Image 1 (spheres, helix red, strand yellow):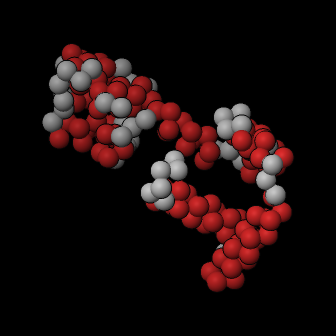
Image 2: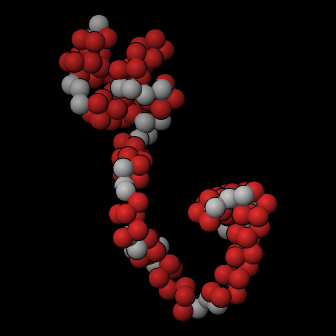
Image 3: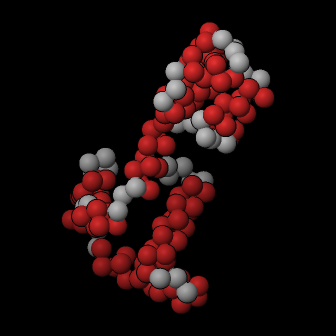
Length: 153
């Protein structure tokens, strides 16, 4: 995503118009428009002021993605009760069909036994509760996936 798109999305998320932002920064509305269309770039001082205005760090402003921010907010604001009602496998299977079909072809019990051993080790060695051990194991699998270097992904 371009810096202009990040600026546009952050401004929209903040509920401010170009005129309002321009007034707060002491620049013209056209300047804000040029920043948001990547015609020109704000200098570092103006970028910092924008970050403060939008309640973001400078790094967050540069990488601002409204969709990611919305997902982050939904996760943070979803109650434990609601999370328990969601069939996450079914939901993710809409995007990744293998999640619905693998139980028919994979001997789940074999893998489950090995994974239970790993979870038990994590809990015993580090004092994790069940959920924390599961999250750590998930993160380790993600790390292996991202660093495998065998072209599998």
